[in-house]
Amino acid sequence: MAKVILTVDDSASVRQMVKFTLSDAGYSVIEAVDGMDGLAKLSSPVNLVITDLNMPNLDGIGLIRSVRANPAWKGLPILMLTTESQEARKLEGKAAGATGWIVKPFTPQQIVAVVKRVLG
Image (cartoon, rainbow, N blue to C red; front, side, top):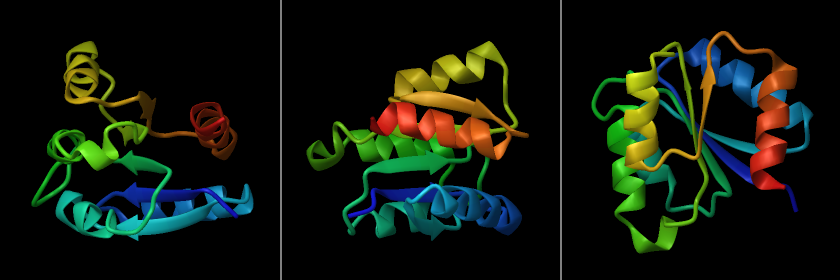
């Protein structure tokens, strides 16, 4: 059975590109439009979350903190996929519980390589 990845981004074009890339690599992808939608969609079994940082309603840091606060999702890998590359923002993401950080723009090969490394 394919590993399931939840991609959370307020940009439809980014969600579409991530879904296309990861589906091509054999993963099943669920899309969410912001952090609140992402939390709601975690009711389905998910193997990895890829989230943007800057989103309306609930940003990526808030999403990560909410996920990490739930014992059922304690070990769930979470990757930040964002235009933010400042070290302070990366440290904030890591402190919240992010597993890794991918800076936009990214190549399809780059995102697939990171996902494979995280999911094994």
